[in-house]
Image (cartoon, rainbow, N blue to C red; front, side, top):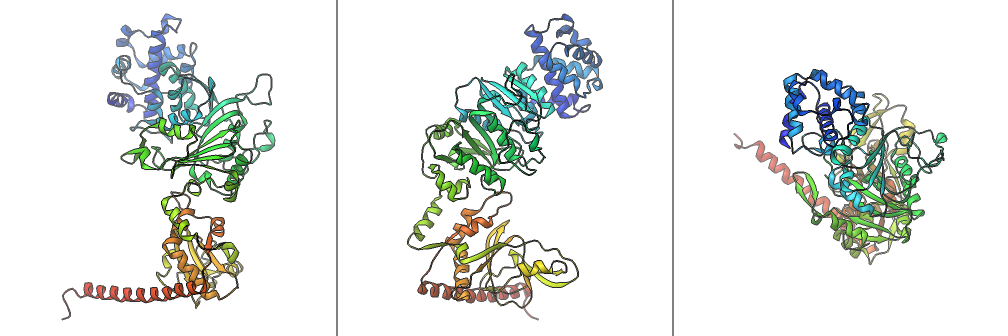
Length: 583
């Protein structure tokens, strides 16, 4: 393997790394086809005795001739290549190396997933292998659209029917077929705009596959003219983000099972993605959701989830599998490697229910969670189970039934107008009421918007984006206040003693139980957040009068303790300031 990367440097000063890899593997394909007798003309067959006199111009001329014999050379010569820039000695070394080398990486690995060179996000070998094994279907063909890389072709002996719009993929597919003996039929096209697998003699009907596997790009943007889709694929998709469109195209070409890798965000985001999840569940097509651990992909830290769709599904329940447990993988640096892929697949195939790992969920339960497929909703951690146990004796009520909840909005500083202070989570008091002001802004044209979002005494603030879970209780307001857009404002309805109830809710949300409950609602890794809808549906225990009195007493105790802490800090600061004592 190391010798391969050493030889990249032979041509690397005349062309970039990917061009060098293209040249090396096209030469390898030439040698393989020659040795297998698949080139009819002797003038284009690789001849080892001629290597010593071969120069770059002669090689380029041979490749031009080879383009008439085989698609791989047509694809290579149609690209802008810089063979002629390599001097004769280096070319001779390169030809000899390719001919004699026994340790060239597999084609897909060289182009997409070597540790020395990663061009873009690409599917790793272990994820591709897991995806293929999860298909578990009887068919001699797998349909694979929207995929950057072909690692899955090494995990099956089935024919691959692939289509994508990345030009280089067409060359890589042909090289893999020749060198690695894969069976990839690749069509260079944008499958959303111009799908290539059509039923024969039926121009407006897509070919139906029993098995489909796809690793679509995440959050790709684009526009689709839905009125021009003669295949009637898009039942839910709208907008410029194409995640749902990719998935709907896969559904339209699948009559059996599809395994699709999506970002974790696709399991819980609202809007069109929530509509699509409902569409899958209501049609009883969603068979399983498999949460993968982080750091599986070399070029992205995005956490991912396998969706398994089965149009022949009989059982109406959905299986949820959490593979984030360390018993399933080892760590190599920051990278994660599965210990036993077959063990993971068996959990799915057996429909096993395993504590903390796998469960089967009724569609009514999923509907009650607004069709969220986030794994933590259905596979409860030991911490979550402990919370349920502690709160089991209490009557509970949804937060939206006792309070109005609204996420604050962005206010721009207009540099002139009404002076308003904006609170961020860093301004929250550690105990008691938050009274101090935050960042000063001037609002002119936004004054009307301010009247809608201005804070009132006894509002409870909850940080719900980035730094998630911090809580504040607004006291008597001396200056006009608003909250930053990372904050949800909870305003209790005018029933009972607002001050007492606000203190009780504030203290509950700050408690270990409250924080653990909020933690369960957190979605996202790069930018953790809790949606307004989730906060509204958060079930809060109803406390007795005596319990409320106890909580308020604790509120006052916490204020006193925090004051003592501040005094002690002040004394420590004085020691640091007067290290040598007073003179």
